[in-house]
Amino acid sequence: RRPSSPRSVQRAGAAMSMLALAVRRGAHVFRDAARATGVRPLASFHCSAQTMGAFNDNVTFSHIAREWRCKWESKEGDLAELQKVLDSKLAAIKAVDGVVSVQRVVCGDCQDYKVVTKLDAGKFGAWEEAKFAPEAEFLAEIEKLGVKRIETQTYTLETL
Image (tube, rainbow, N blue to C red; front, side, top):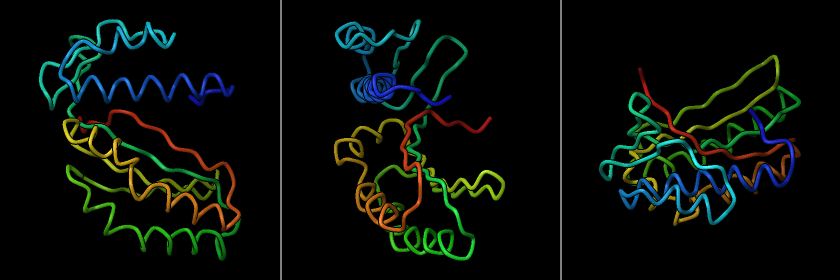
């Protein structure tokens, strides 16, 4: 689900930042931070340790992912150039402390291009503090290509 207004986007970003903060601190800071920012708190979010979080008793996580995405227009042009940019940043992405996996998702029908970097939850906060490097460079380079709808999103990601 994509936030539909600038305020929604801001609140969604604040919620995920608070999630990462709670994971880093291993405490019940999410609810207090949510009240301070006006973001509706998740029911019983808590972190029992630096590397494990939970939304409730049966929805737990130990990984957080950061997704970079855009819409491409031409298989011959945009898609090939997007891959070149990713190839140039891949070693730096994989070198981030705590990276578990880096995945690329391409949909030919809806022309999505996504890069998903999955980290151990306990290491995610340090990457966030580093502004998800090399995210800014990657996004700036793909913007120069003229691709559309460049977005980022943070979420939990677990193999079941």
